[in-house]
Image (cartoon, rainbow over all chains, first blue to last red; front, side, top):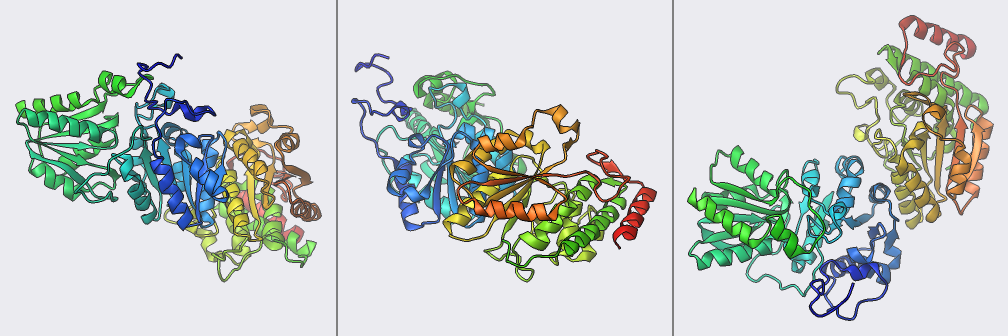
Length: 335
Length: 278
């Protein structure tokens, strides 16, 4: 592919360099937020091990491989086995962080995760990258159902941070919980800015990033940024929406969510995932279970498979953009 | 780990007979079950728990214990009977086998406690967990051995071969896999279902030491574990040929995954085992 300054792939949102040896000259250095966090944790606790299935650089575990080689395990392209090995290591007293792309980890290894991690509550941290439709690599690489799968498993904690600036806290939260955790991460394409004035990411807690009583937008992962953009846009139109970061998808902060909804006229959920079984479903279950009726819209992949493409293209085509969120808020207020 | 003391062949044989009687009684209560596999593997279980595995009956969670994973998690009549005979399980509980609410489930689960090192039942997963345990044990410089029993039909699961490659890559020589080779699976003869043979050549090509034995020959079992321990570079696989229904002549060789065991047949089997060895 010709690489020119106007190449839309210039930002390399998907870190294609990780699949080749040589870094491309145009690339801007971006911190490995997750890799650094894991490395720091592994330095402090030698029982932490990093396992990966032939995706070392794309999961930022190259830092552990290079700096703490004794704490790195290459498992080969065999995710099901890697999950089982992780469970065995956990039973021997280690804390394995098991890495792959979200789609391979969740779909391919689902039974192994259920039986060897979730059921026995082994202290394994599953770390999936390339969440939702955020992938140039196409439908095979798009984890549109991983949250639904992991949510359905008893004993599983699910954390999807909104920003790489939260990854250190996410790793700390995963370690603070002795048991199975699924971390759903994307790689930073630019330096991330820590959020000011909000508490740090914690399991079981929501964080209100933007306040407004007209509508509540519950978002997770990459959709938090879209929700904040939507809220800014709506504000200019005198519509005040709250944006709530639901990084802890399981356990959900039920009390906090009910409190926000009680103050809101309508509810919108936003997730980079199918609308079936993910955050939107979880919020709907809470509302229905507590006899709360509000205009309600789920932004996400609308029960379909997608295709490879850039984030702006796919988020636009599949209805995951700030514009779609803002439209849903307005529709809720009009109903 | 073998501790130096040899259990006499007679004791191993007598224990296997007691286990077989327990298997008959446990399955007979339900009229149907994993009787053929239990009788077939009774000698292996007698050997494992009365000669090979190192454990502490007073502390089942002893960190340096040898780990045994029953990847053929359904073969529980023989497993529970052996645990009871080895002082690891209250023999009284054998009467609860497969009853509602009992932790002696038909597929072994860790509801039973640390004696079940991981919950298998979903075939193909045991070797991966065993490999993780072996890697962890070695990292902690424990001299514990990790042992698992696999069925031959289970070799049809792709994950077994992923794990086999992984164990060889990481030279997990503290890992010993016993394949209970009776060519019996739900659909019939395993060889008619999938080309699992030659098991030894397949595993050798994957980087394993393989040792083929008669799964009813205690001397061969002893020698195979000596060979497994002697190889410090590769995981080992003991391919144990077993005969379903072994020990009861009129049941020997009958292949049935979940065989019906009428009361009178069970009575005859018990009588035969009493008369022959009692």
